Length: 331
Image 1 (cartoon, rainbow, N blue to C red):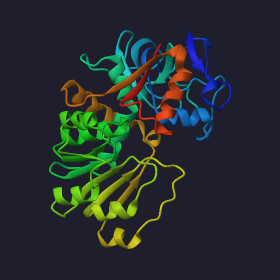
Image 2: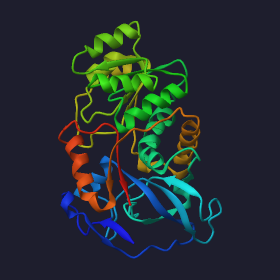
Image 3: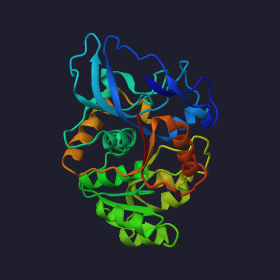
Image 4: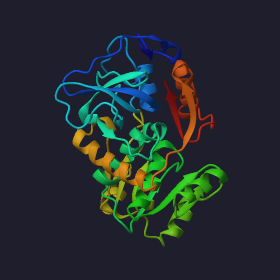
């Protein structure tokens, strides 16, 4: 089979493209013919060596996939050849990834794809959708009528947060950097969209919440400003952090405990299969009901996986501003 793979960690140029043996599903595994695979920042961190994980050699990167069941291993009960499926949590903790024509995936990490959802959409919403869901509901227990804030409402996770919060009846505040992105967030239901380049974010949030503050703050930035955030959170507000591995910002302890605040941190790939399946069930339902949409910013053929990695890094690390939405790789 054709695959993108690497023998050692390093810059995007370490990714090779060529033939590797097609895997055979073991007990409890499903062989998926990959229709689409999505690219996430964690994929670039693992490839570069910034995040150290056990890697088989050669190593196929990629967390997300969607496609069709080609074969099932012994003991698989939920799927059969021909079923359309999607999943995430591959290319992690010693597992091979999804940047190939075929991928063997444990049954516990695979979910049925709704009939009205395309492979590209299912793959693109996988990791970011599960991440957004875990933060909003497992961690922060967002409820109808509460106010949620997220940085970057058209980013991979941010877009999912905006739409999921609206799906459960919350009010949503988000930030963007252009009028076009603001229009997109409003189409997704955001109640207050602020331009971080021109608006006084703090003043606008205080005005919108009538001085009461935000109930759930979903932080997607690498360097959280806790002084600003604590001031903008409501009494018993909850804050979620899921980025910034090297960040060591100052923390206002007094403001934190005197407002009865809570702070949650999590890594999506450490959530259990049961927890992730709960997320997937809601994602499938909301996508079927057209309450959850994913924006695909750019697609690359599998042969250009190295270029896809470079492009994502230009935007996540170097702020090129040339990407709005997800990067998808097509075998």
